[in-house]
Length: 100
Image (cartoon, rainbow, N blue to C red; front, top):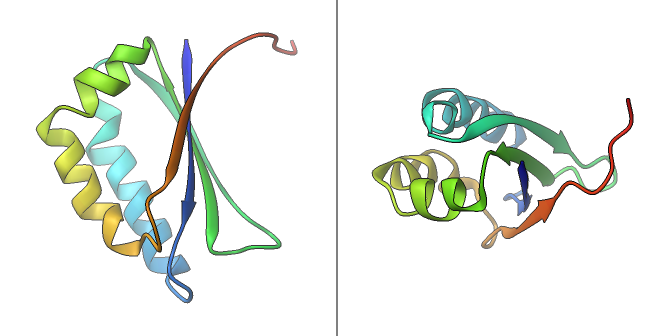
């Protein structure tokens, strides 16, 4: 399993609208993508315009090719992109250890 970690900064004062949009985008677009396993979304306490989105994929290619090179990515960005204060930082991770 691959973890996609996206560090997202949004425009001030847009929290409620962004949170609705990201939930909708995850449910309607990403949730039906091949290789999608689940997600978490966290909002910053010290920096409330900062969000950390974690998406779990079967393979790296499910995200980088299957999703990013599809129409679904365009739909996703149309839903959440207008809230971004700048491009998200996105990186991928492999599981090394996990608690029970």
